[in-house]
Length: 129
Image 1 (tube, rainbow, N blue to C red):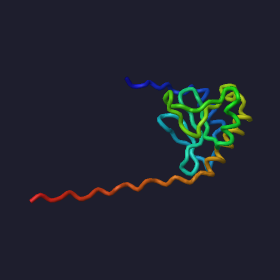
Image 2 (cartoon, rainbow, N blue to C red):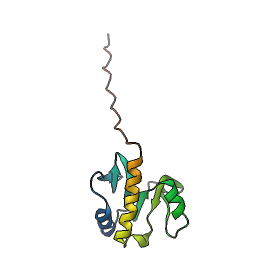
Image 3 (tube, helix red, strand yellow):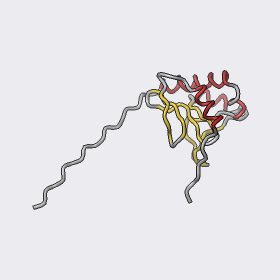
């Protein structure tokens, strides 16, 4: 049975738009949800009623013990490595949230830039005799 995903609330989308940085970050949708990328690497986004950030290992290790932070999972039991869910209590604290988004942006900038895959040219059809 296919999983039904819920749209993010207008409030959460407004929060994302308020804290998501401008250039060099690029905003686009990922699986129908707002997301932000730098050098082709996603560093933040929304999924249903959650905001997630991509953070370096040392930062993730520090916040693992803090209340409210958890690994980001699109499907239960299938975590996305390097991504964590922003605690709900932080979503109403725009200044503090921006600080976390900046950490995610800086981490995204430190990653190897993604390059677009070259599309394979179609081979000409063989002529039949």
